[in-house]
Length: 175
Image (cartoon, rainbow, N blue to C red):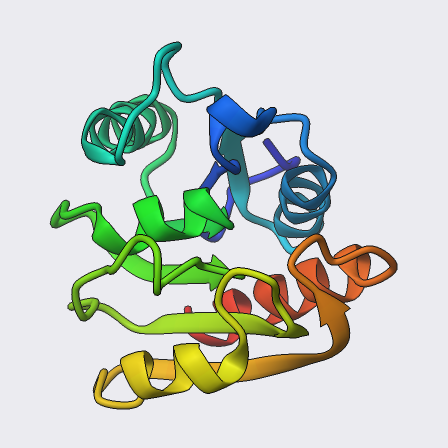
């Protein structure tokens, strides 16, 4: 957690564990660092072993929110990358006040319209859900900002720091 009183908390969700996703994924680490540098209390965790279709993982997110809420008295947001973005978008908890979804595979794992402000960052060359597939899904979401990450594919090589900074800036502006 950052020094002093955090301006909010962020639970950070990682890519699918069956494909090597952990809390130490490079995008997750960049998000964690950017949120902490922006004054947020950031918490990253590993989804339970034997992860599935996102149901158990949503319970993991709620448990992470519980853990963060025990330590801070501030708003809580959820951010995720890839599978973690889909889980973030589909987790229902009244304590969530904003969502950042980076490279969500919306064509593979559909998500409901968020009830809180959301930022969806989709890589221009995403192998799983490129902008022309993601945009029609999210354009009807009334509280969603949709942005394309130019020159990037799903794995965000060379773009992780900029993407993480954009996520932190957006959350800071939504305080």
